[in-house]
Image 1 (cartoon, rainbow, N blue to C red):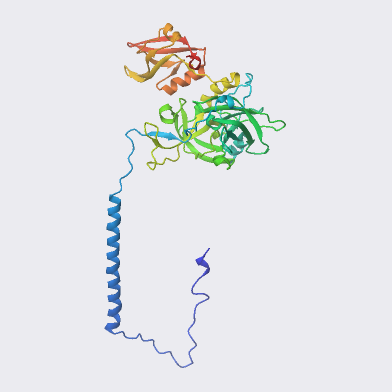
Image 2: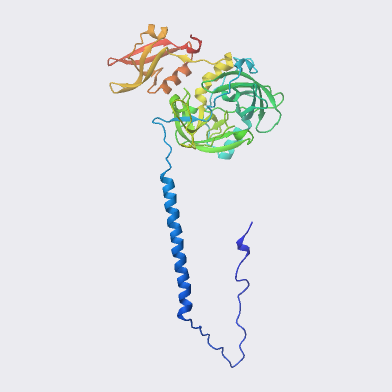
Length: 428
């Protein structure tokens, strides 16, 4: 590499005048005279060069302007929708979930969150999260030498791991390896998954290896602007990488992010391989499972718009407090559930009140309890509900076969209606 600072000029203390004999003074220096011809020729040469250069520039600028005027800017659809990087269409195959390596559920295992502790430095948060993470590698079915690689969060010292379903989709064998410490590779089995919520629970036998389970924090306590860290395995081989950002938004719903859970949006950098990794709060607790990033827009038919727009700093994570009811049900039964009221509904306003308006009542329990079309649900189990995400959150945390008490507004009068939630996944 050239380093022009190595070549200094003038070098040394500078040139000195030759010595002058004593009694003599140097003759004064006289500038030679220049004739008019000697000045005229260079001036004419410079003028001609400038005229020629100006003509070339004028021709070039006009040509570029004409070319740009013929280029049509890309157009977006009237209603562009965000496209998530995890929504990749799978190649057709004869694969089914039965081809996964399955393990048995354990009802004695149950996860819960802890209150946040004191704020840690970024270094301390990283040191708390890294030992709890594994690399997840799943080999695809009917594809030679093809595998999905992501991240997983160890949640018990017996080897249970939370990760994303899309990592194990269309795969037949799964292995995990700690991102820190012991480098042995462990075979993992699937306890259960929820495809729509992009959650999967794995189990591996650590043997004599002592695992460090993650501390799970209450994601309900997050607020926009809170600092968070994403720790995972980007690109499948940059193990233990951490990026930092803030909570950009909360409760990104189904229409915006492709999930019925209200997702956490963050500007912490996420890349392929971060899937299933940890979104960590300032206390070093896992408050989300990183799952996707919004990278562009799509047309309504699902076709991506190339070269139209590139989005950066829009990562998504599943809130851990919203995931736990499903994870605990998977741990206990090996399958997921979907607590439901037995209605169709939408967010609405009536008499100056915000709530969820009932469109149809399809469930027997809700119908027998007296819930009717047109009722505006104001609260569910004491929690105000003004969006579908808020209502779903109450349902999912209440659970199947549990009672839900709603305060509804009907013809200006508030009524209290109680009925039992059902599991929509078991209904035809």
